[in-house]
Image 1 (cartoon, one colour):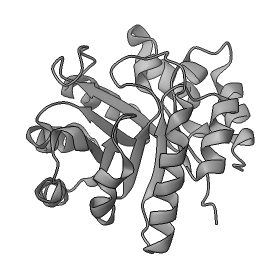
Image 2 (cartoon, rainbow, N blue to C red):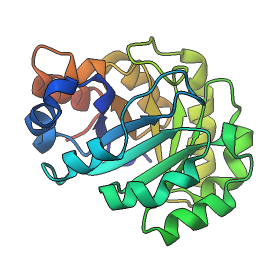
Image 3 (tube, rainbow, N blue to C red):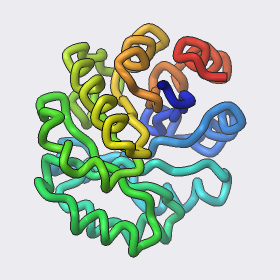
Length: 221
């Protein structure tokens, strides 16, 4: 059975000169905010860090889903909590056994999730899904906005959904990368219930209408 659809705009696609305004515009219409933290090492780009998260926290009550595209994510748990983050997702590619990281996140007062890149098989993360509040399946190579959806990840989403259901786990299954109403439908049909959309929302002529179109596509209310 499908869970309620959740929409998470990606801050990476917002106007960095007017972040608070962009977030305020869509706040009442979305479920949480996806915050990409990049270190210039795990991925080649830098995005933003604790000062931006802290500043935004003062302007919005949205839940902050902090996607850590970094080589040493555990070192950021306490700073992210202090800045106002709610959930950290860490890449399996930098921690083949994330058990200790999950404990550290909980100790810091954060929710915890794991991320797998398009090239990483679901089997790599399967033994650890029980640790997760959220499992993020990347549908693009991380580090750059505006990429096209990679359809080859759909069987991985299906595998994740079957695993979560068969083991009675509460984890949301989130998909990130190239999400539009058309690609979101495919990911929803495969089993995803949380959808990260950057360009499709923040770069749309009417971001609120774009959120509504995306929610209608995935069967949200």
